[in-house]
Amino acid sequence: MSDPMNVLAPEHRRLRIGDAWRDAASGATFAVEDPATGKTIAEVADADVVDGLAALDMASKAMAEWAATPPRKRSELLTATYRALTERSEEVARLITLEMGKPLAEARGEVAYGAEFFRWFAEEAVRVEGRYSTAPAGGYRILTVPKPVGPCVFVTPWNFPLAMGARKIAPALAAGCTTITKPAAQTPLTMLFLARIMEEVGVPPGVVNVVTTKRAGKVVSALLADSRTRKLSFTGSTEVGRVLLRQAADNVLRTSMELGGNAALIVCADADLDVALDGAMVAKMRNIGESCIAANRIYVEEPVREEFTARFAERMGALSVGHGLDDGVDVGALIDEASVAKIDELVADAVDRGARVLVGGERPDGPGHFYPPTVLVDVPEDARMLEAEIFGPVAPIISFTSDDEVLAKANDTEHGLVGYIFTRDLQRALRFTEGLDTGMLGINRGLISDPSAPFGGVKQSGIGREGSHEGILEYLDLTYAAIDLP
Image (cartoon, rainbow, N blue to C red; front, top):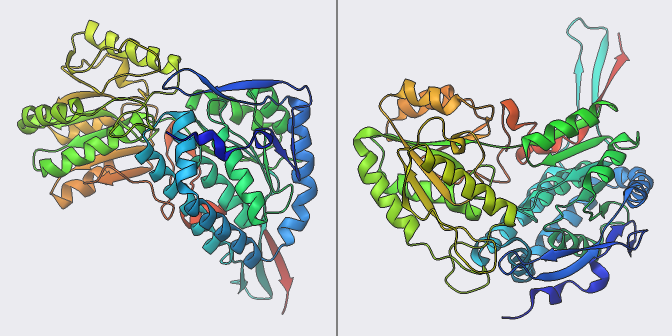
């Protein structure tokens, strides 16, 4: 196989700050591994607080000029980024697979998905509108003027190293904000490559800054404590989100939080089982199950439980596991050893409490961070995997006998990101839509993510929405002017 690292020259494995690619002030670096082999594939700059603040300096200096840039110009630069990503899709996809582990076919899908945010928000950039109206009592006029919130700090996860950054950077730039992105230490290369692409298409210096670091807590805390930062957007665990919200409170920052999930996938007895099986496979196994919207708990109504379980287990067992760059691989490596150990512990806990493993359930020997597709049945309600976000290719199946019962179980979680329902009864689907405490719902489909749709959760799954028209509103403040006009 060709070396995906050839697309990212050594000089572009450094910090992107202003108009320069620079080493960390301390000269420190850290290693990036291929999770399928455990081998180091690159060394990247390891920023400290001084580097993060240097990036904020550049973002602050660029802010006024970027905010004053005509919306059409901002739109054209976003469109150019979309085209560049599309043209270089194979290079980006191979880089994603190498540092994150997902199969190449899925990495290609991520590139298409991530690129689409740039196209969508290129269109939104020229549609930011205020309003002018007569006050109801008369005597004056009401004028509202949307304005960019200011420099934004983004903390992005490793599971979608391109798309999660694109989902934040694109609307911020469309609104006229400058950005500092701190990508996950496991997968910094894809974000650096995106920064390189945006430099090549002509995005001005200081508008897109990228700070790679293994000292995320110190660097991000310093950025949030600086009064020049006006917005924080984070995608990651609820636990880390709570910490960042506390820090953001000191400067009353605008925040967007896309946090953890514990999605219930519900298969009703009246569902088309072929559709339900296809949807369950996508909802569970997309991105190797390393997704906040992955089906974490699968509830199947008793009359179809046996058939659905047998067919689902057969399909899970037929998936091939291996290096994501190899032909024919369905399931790549998990991100790191900690992820594999966590999943192994959750499976062992469920089995100790009485669950049965139908497929998988044992981590393989050899190098790399692999875990096989796994299906469990007879999973008791006190099993930890029904409360924890599994984040891997493990599917617990639980039976139910009534809608009230399964709604209560599905909602019995601090999370509320997404749910899935499979039924041919429209009224039943609508009752679940109203009854499930989630920000999103898939009805007879296992894939819901779309740049044109508002992505986000309720309860402790997050604040705000990404994508859709609502996504750009997260980066706009509103000034209201009362104009005297008798």
